[in-house]
Length: 230
Image 1 (cartoon, rainbow, N blue to C red):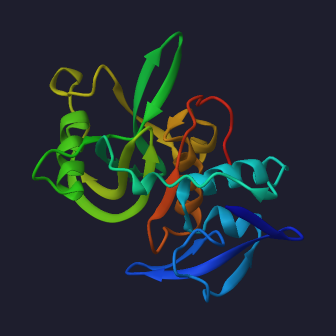
Image 2 (spheres, rainbow, N blue to C red; image 1 turned 90 degrees about the vertical axis):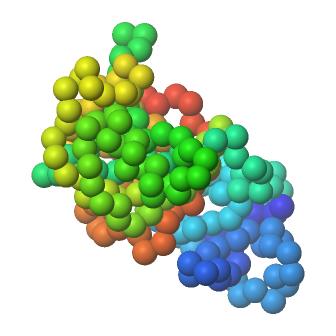
């Protein structure tokens, strides 16, 4: 497909689904010849639902690094491919800190949002509470879905969860050798957290308000150390 810019703004088509508005690259949406077009700044595009998500990741990465692509780019739509695994993750925040699972590997640490695979017959909402209990010992109430993330063939759903109780003793938890830890939310942009493209957004949303509709993100990042702001 062709990526179009007008000066320093990205040209996209405006569409609607059952969750509200979303944007698409011109020509990426069948039967959309009459769709209105809008121009978004980089800041606006970073927080817009842009489809296909894989192409959006490529464009935003390059644009945020000062090399906005012009002309044809590959159409990459992970939502069109059946997932090899569906995962549900719990974003739990207390007293300005978010609950993460820390893993020590190769002399360093990386972090994951508590969660795991959705089992047959479960909804993502049911799975996120089960996984939170298994990995941290906490119970809770599921709030809004804040993001859908496609990564390495997986389709992942992330929910705000109001958790109850305290983190359980290590010997009672099933988190593949990880350790539940509380990390200040304002440190998330610099924390090697997977999925990488979600980490800085959680900090942003915590300050400015949670999204009305779930963010839709493709995340192909494998190296968690470098900063990501796109």
